Image 1: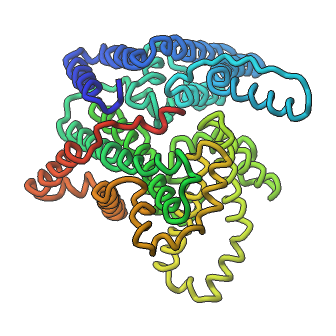
Image 2 (image 1 turned 120 degrees about the horizontal axis):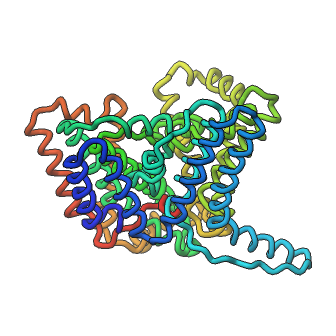
Image 3 (image 1 turned 135 degrees about the horizontal axis):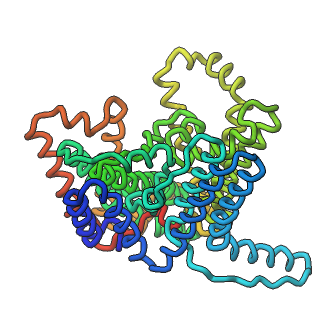
Length: 487
C-alpha cells in the first residue's frame, strides 16, 4: 500500500482505534502486528529479513551483557555488525560491485564474469539496519542497557511510520517511550494530524508537481540547455526537500498521534549559510549517526589537517554509498566532503575578503549572500544525486551557460521555460513553491503549528480549509513514490 493512499490512511485509523481500545500493556503488540502487516503488504518475504536483523541484534546485545571480558563482548558486536551489514551489502551492493569489477577487469583484459543475484532491495533496509547497528554499538559501549523484551525491541526496529524512510531512531530515545502509558490527548492528536496534513501537502501538491518538470529534463538532458536546466535543478532541490520532509512530517505526526516522539529530521536546511550548517539541518538523524559512529571514531576534528580532510571525504563517501549502489551517489557524497574541505581551507581568505569590502559590517546582506551561495552549491551537487548517469550530470553542468538567448526569443521562450508542460501547470508549480517559501520564512521565527495555535479559531480553520482544498484540487492523479523509499 502507498504511504499516502486512501488504503493506507484507512489502515492507520483502524490501527489507531484498536490501539486506544486495547489495554495499555497490549498496545505495543498492536503496533508491532500493524508494523509487520504494513511491511509485508509490499512483499511478504521482507518480513523474514527484518525479523532476522532484529533477532541477531537482540541476542547479540544479551550476549554482550552476559560477559564482561572485552574479547567476548567484541565477538557479539562483530557478529551483529557482520550479519546486519552483510544482508545490506548482499541485497543492495553485491550486484553493483560485481558488475563494476567485471568492467574493470574487462578494461584490463582480465577474464572475469559477474554472477548477479538480481535480488530486490527491501524497502527501508538501509534505515532499519542503521538502527540495529547503532543499538549494538551503544550496548557494546555501555551507553544502552540491552532491551529484555523481544517484542518491544522488535517494535523499535519495525515501527511502521518511520520504517520506510526514517528518521533513524536511537534505541535510548525511542524504546523508553514504548513503556509509557499513552492516554488520549486530543491536543496532541490534533497537532499530529495537522503535521500529517502539512506533510501530505508538501508531498502531493508541491513535490509531485515539481517532479513533472524535473522528470522531463532528467529523462533526456541532452535535449535541454541553459534556463531549462536551471529550472530543473532548482525545482529538484525543492522537490527532494518537500518529498523527504513531507514523509518525515507524516511519520512524526502519525507517531505523535500514538503518543511517541520521533527525532526532528529537518530544520529549514535551505536557510543554511554554509554547507556544514546545511548538514546540521538536513537529514539530521543520518548526519548525527555518521558523526557518532564513523566520524568521531575516526578522530573527528581533533586530528591533523590531512587526517581531518580524509575523515570528511570518507564519511561523505559512506553517506553517498548509503543512498545507493551507484557512482552518482558516491560522487554526490564526495562533492559535499570537498565542500567542507574547501570551506575550512578558505575560511581565512573569506574573512579577509569580506572585511576588505566592508561586507562584515552588513550582517543581513552578508548572511543572505552566504545562504544563496550555499543553496547554489547544494543544488549543483543534487545534479549528481538525481542524474541517471555521471555523463548526464556532466552534460547538465557543462551546458548551464548555453542557450540563454532562447529566453529572449518569443518563439522558443515558452517551450524553453515550460519544459513541455502547460502555462497553467507552470504557474501552479511556481505558486505552490512561493507559498512554501513564505511558510519556510515564517518558521524562522516560530513553529507554524505553535503560531496557528495562538490565532483565532476562524483563521485556523480557514488555513486548514485551504490546505485540504489544495490537497483535493492541486494533487496530481498519478502520485510519485517517495524518493527515499529506494534507499
